[in-house]
Amino acid sequence: MSNTTSTKTNYGALYTLITVFFFWGFIAAGNSIFIPFCKSYFSLDQFQSQLVDFAFYTAYYVGALLLFAFGNYSGQDIVGKWGYKKSIVYGLLFSALGAGAMIVAVEANLYAGMLVGLFIMALGFSLQQTAANPFAILLGDPKTGTSRVNLGGGINSFGTTIGPIVVALALFGTAKSVSEDQIKHLELSKVVLLYIGVGLLFIASAALFYFSKKVPSGVANEPIEKANKALRSLLIMTGLLVITFSPVFSSYNSTEAKKMVAIEKSIEPITKMIASHNEEIVKIKHDEKTKADQKQAMIALIEKDIAAAQSSIKPQTNEIDTIKKPLEKYRMGWLAAALLVVIGGLLFSYSSAQKKPEGWGAMQYPQLVLGMLAIFTYVGVEVAIGSNLGSLLNLKEFGSLQSSEIAPYISMYWGGLMIGRWAGAISVFNLKGMQKTMALIIIPLIAFGIILGVNILSGKDMKPLYYYVFCVLIQIGAFFLSKDKPARTLLIFGSFGIIAMVVGLCSSGMVAIYAFLAGGLACSIMWPAIFSLSIIGLGKYTSQGAAFLVMMILGGGIIPPLQGKLSDIIGIHQSYIVAVVCFGYLTLFAVLVKGILKKQQIDVDAIDTAAGH
Image (cartoon, rainbow, N blue to C red):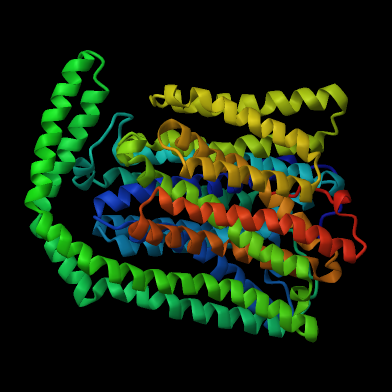
């Protein structure tokens, strides 16, 4: 039991706690800018650049798995034993250590070192997230606990909104366009300063928590429901994931890969010239002083030079394609195997648990196992859309935007989650009738205005995104249709996601950009809906089931690299078919789980949808 007896909300502790929620959103969304930067700076392919997400989100899985394994072995909840306060302090200090590792890696100019730093930082986040949600509920009356968690979720979303802007300014030092070649020659001193600042904030927050007398210890000595078979299954799944990813990583040191790199270096002066010409075309298109006919004539001359340059290196590019195609198929095969390991592992666990439930713990419940796969898919698609957006916007048919120009779009994508979460939190204020109707209309529009305002203040041109308000209005309509019912909400927003992705795949330009950005609006309300549907009816296994769901944040480390590798084969635009499949499963889960819970005599429409993320 908790050592706190007061039901009065501890606002001092709560305001300190929500800074942790901000960090999660800030760092996670900032990765969407960091990925295209790393791709240009270190000359990476799309899969290699997606390893930023792989390192970050895999750490959540590893951290949650270690906590579960220790608890299962000792019979005690380690977070509860330490207390939520100390657990968050330890998590913040661990994240500060990760920021320190990032600084060392940046100084050494090592991409692999940066990945290690992000992994360590996210391990700290894993511990923080395990403690923060129940701690928020502990800081006052349990009946109003949901509103406190939602406040944290709203601050988390604000972090996702300003994260891309701050990281872009730290990397590029300007709101103006920076060419890909300029990126490769940027000084990384500002990145060092960024992570020094982040590290100091982690330490300051840890100190504030530790020394604050207002923050209760939050010790909870409750026994753990052991699940040895579930642990064994997860460990085997982890081992198989290591096996499936190893050939992909090792293939980058193969003879074929080295030969391909050598050819690319031999034609690098010409490819740089082509890139420079393409950047010149973009500048001409945006030059408001030059007349349209003059622009066309200038662009035609440059395109003629580009065609001549491309023709001169055609033998080399053909040789690269000959080497690359079988190599990419080989890598894609192993990445697909990794996905099958997760899907197969979860379904095997459920099947085995149905035959003999003893030792499987929460995994004996179908709603949880399918929910684990849903969380895996949801986090995966949410991260994949945003992380691959930079390369998509780099395409000619999407505006040929430079890495330094994509921050407003990334900010709007992650801001879409803030819009949805703010709207989703309205229900906790018990508004009725016209008040609730007006709030559902006004709050999302206010959130949209904040996203525009923050970007405009940072010097970004937001004019291309003004009409995105129509996508927000569609989301508002979806909220009215969902009626605060989790299965219905997931079905409607999953369908919204499918339609948006199909429109994006079948079009180009601003229509497609708006459609892909709308993926953020579709994802915004999914976490609480999936979470609520997955843990209902678990009884004494509810806490364990919640831990398993957090573990499946792993999806953010597998699905984005999978899409990244697919894009290396079929193109970045076409690779968004992955998002269609993901939203398809989430919609299917909404249908299946309703039937499963009905068999257990559970009224799915009576479940509270206001759980936080």
